[in-house]
Image (cartoon, rainbow, N blue to C red; front, side, top):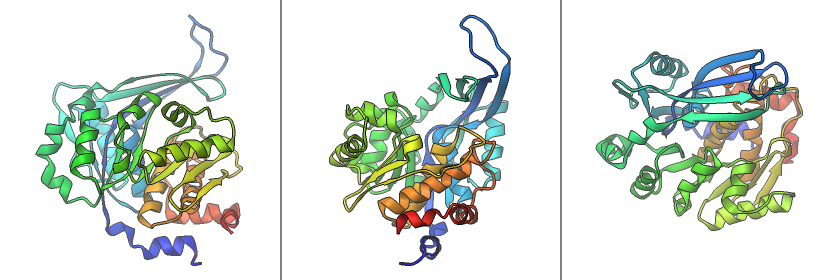
Length: 326
């Protein structure tokens, strides 16, 4: 079998036009330096950064060499302008994005404890509800020029329904975003090539308690039965459980000392887009996704600015990770 990276390079994926549709927001992350006390303030650090699930996946995808455009919405404020500029510097075409006058860019705010674990999160995402079916109908000519779409469920249900039924063969990956928003895909999985929930999202959607490996594969099977072609359930220290019509696999993560606890999921999703275009198997795709997640964890930023195929090659060699596929 040819080296995995050789097969990816031979696929000439950079010629394929990808449109990323969904969330675009400012992330505010607050991490306490000591134990949180209800009703009191504690010292910590507050970071602001570009966010939005599909925007993050697009940035990671562009760094991996994919041809990416972003279709989302922002306000005419400083945050929106700053995030657009940052996204464009990574090679993502943001010309399809729309800027709304007298509106504020969406915000996602998370509170982390002293160990870096998220305790609470609040999002202000109402602006994205303006991405209605009539809006997408007005952009129909532009959408038809794209080869594939990557979506997140920040989009309203009626918009997801419109896109799935209007472009049934274009949707290569959907990120469920959260347990609540995953429900917006009910009845739409037959239009989805790849779905990537995390453990909590998969358990909530399928109604299966994920206590052992067999439970994860039962959840994968249920999502396949509902119509998804490929399912990848990320489960932190366990790794990625995957299934398609040909195989099921569990690929454990790399053992490393992370510098960051955020961003790994979006990096993994970008690698799964790449893997889908290169027609990799479920196991190979999970392996590539874990490498990309590791690249994120080895950076202090949510998105590793040095992410590239070459970086994944180096990580693979350093950890002798490809042996897991033999």
